[in-house]
Length: 578
Image 1: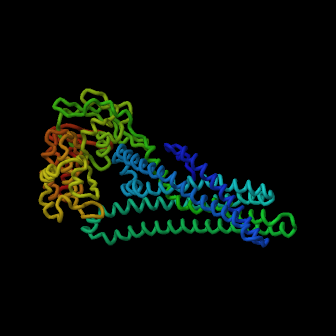
Image 2: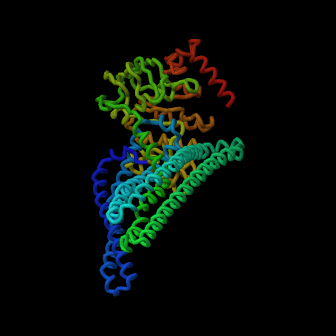
Image 3: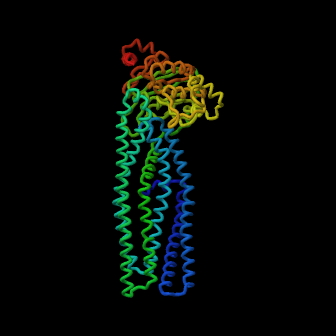
């Protein structure tokens, strides 16, 4: 429950030290409160004057007030730290996802990453806020109370000490069962998130194919599985809470019975007996609070582990090797014996890649699905580090990888499905240039062919689009991505990962006319499976099972009876079927 990585958070040790002092003072207030209350009740029982309970009542009221003010102080001391830590954790997570690139999103699922960055961090905040204070309370308050009870009557203290490990053992057994259930529930939540995102993305296609109602059954099944996991977790949580309350109440009752026997036998007096009976529920209160909050923070702990797993993923180091990333007529980009293996796998996805690209030109990357096109783009974008001993040379500089700040600042990556934020059209276009003027944004939209579409929107560039807002077609999303690139005309390296793969022929043909001017005088790597794009390429790389089978100009490759010719034939058949 208490992850050791919590102690590695900056500033947490000083906060814990302050909490220790506050919780210890609170435990003293609990003892003082119980003692004063017992004195007041005994004085009334013995029919003493009312003024005899004034001082005990004032002491009780003061201890009661200070006790709860200390609770407020604990939260006031710790909450700003938790809020700051959660914010920094979200920033670190987003930066890490950016460094890892699209591969981590493809592996974990878009829904999972979005859920982790939004709701997951909120759950981590709840986890940090509750678990640390509760664990410290559990480690201090019962023992202060037990020490005072032992000073009053050691027999009752011995019973409470013996029953405590039994209750903890029972709680651990049920807690492990609840954790197992919560782990499955969190995994189900991740599946539900990914499934929901995939459903939203493909809803238009499903409707066109008449499969939307049929696919609704899949959505229902995933949701139903998550509901069952949630209810199963709640059953264990409610059972463990009931059992813990039952055993603690029973233990207090046993203490009361033995104290009654001692009073009847004259082995104790009313004041210590009543003090012990008043303190007994507070002795068990920290473990009850911890148990109830344990179930409330299980998802937070799972989210904490998931976030830390992403943060612990290996990233490329030594980013500041490159002195310049500008592309000129004399620029040379050379790959020599480059292999690339994704983290967590042992088989290289790219094997012995060798090519030499000179100056600004259009480089086509073709191959069947799974041939390594996206992996090569990940290496080119600096999202994936090549294996040793292969290396890369750019502008005469030998580089271990392309995770170079100057190179990445010069790159623009266009995926198959560009992500649109829930913002206005203008803000989406100005993603890479947030300070761009409205006139520059309008000019970029006009160059990207968005003028007619913008005229149909109620608020033009100020229309809110993205998830939960106005829908955008695939072609419009690609044009917004192009507008982003056109607005930031300083980036000279363009990486296209099959940007028109999910568009119909008419939309693709119209989009192509706007994309070609964007490629002029730039170094372009264009992964595609559409035949008509090959005629626009200056150089073509043919990948097959992670290996570079052929390379050359389209005219040269078409003269050979090799991998290029076979792929072109397959592309031609696909275009005919379309």
